[in-house]
Amino acid sequence: MTKKTLGKSLIGVSLICLLVFLTGCTPTPSEPGNQNEEEFTKEEIQSALSSKGDEVFQITWSTEEKMVVYIQAGKPEKEGLDEAYLWKVGEEEAKFVRDVSPTTHGFAWSPDSKYFLISEKLGEGGINSIVKADTLQEETYKPKSFGIPVWSPDSSAIAYGNEFHEYGESWGFLEVYELGQEESEYVWKTRGYLYKVESWDKEGNIGYTEINDQGKETKKTTKNIKPSISGVHLGDSKAQVEAALGKDYKETSPGEEVGHFPEQVFRWDYDGYTIFIGAESGGVLELNATSPQAETNLGIKMGDTASKVFEVYRPRYIEPESIHGGKLYGVFKVEGAAALFFSFDLKEGQTLENIKPENKVERIMLTYPEIMDDSF
Image (spheres, rainbow, N blue to C red):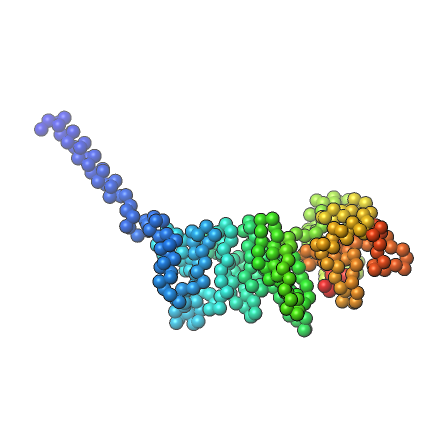
């Protein structure tokens, strides 16, 4: 055999070996961990779960139907606890999430399928854990609720009802928790009522049922907003106040101001605005405005008539009853568990009941009922 012929033979053998090697390295669908989605479809996973009968329950698919969470009855060594699992389409088996209460209410997926919520029974209500689907990491804050919370359309928050009982009084709350925050915020806070949240649409409307202390149910909607005056909201930080009104103010330090504030306050005096900011919380607790430029988030300005104020606010909000007796005319119970108070140019000796359509706004106050020494 010549060197030329030998060289050609070696090249041929090398090519054959290379092809065999490459073919051997190509994963086949039958190897563990290489199944494609067609082998583990939603239907097949659902069938596998259904075949377990009563052993598996609370089967809840994600919005995009690419993942499912469910509960499996716990083994005897779990001492009464059940087990939550997450199974993704295309994967060979489910992942263990964690042990859960045997009285778990259920799950709720975020619209973008990135999070799911586990609602476990706590007394008459529930405690909720928000879990990130790709890491199974839980949010630190665990909201307590009356019913299973509802997700916002953009998957950034949940809305839910909550309740509190103390010294014979019953309070109901409609709360919103935004992911990543340390605590929730009130939309409504009312004595003698309960709130059951049912929906949250793309326009920002939260649909809920309001239940009074007699059991009467009323369907309502609200928005997750904070009313404001000239761009300042209750709870705003000092930086947010300065962004809205500027830095031309005089500050009075804590300890020199009295009132029904729940903590020591800084007082900021602008031309036509007085703002009280909590020394510990760092948020706005009250805002008083007399400036001609003052305007509420619904467009009511200083000098507007009472008829205009009532035309704008009465269809949306109630003028509550005071715990001291009588209806609070010109005071509106607004979002954020707050009170918006319009003062009019009444004559000496006239009371709130004497407000006439032609009376004009001369002061606007945004505060909390308890700071007004009231409760509603």
